Image 1 (cartoon, rainbow, N blue to C red):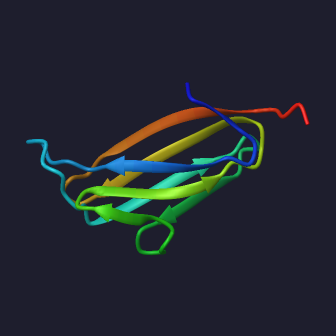
Image 2 (image 1 turned 45 degrees about the vertical axis):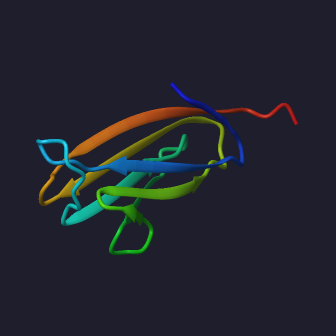
Length: 95
């Protein structure tokens, strides 16, 4: 599990491919994250929170302002329709 420090800004990234492995733009892209206090946030491409980097590649930057376990989910609709989840830790600062 990746580990970061409080006040790091990380880039959450997702790649969407067809069954044959070709990068493809889905109809919609949604990123969700949950902080250690269980606050859920949803951002979308349409809402300008998610940025298209290139065909099939999307990202959002996230400021990690709380220590603990964070969760992230990227999902899409259309072709390709996919979802993936991950978690990561943010360390407590000694200062």
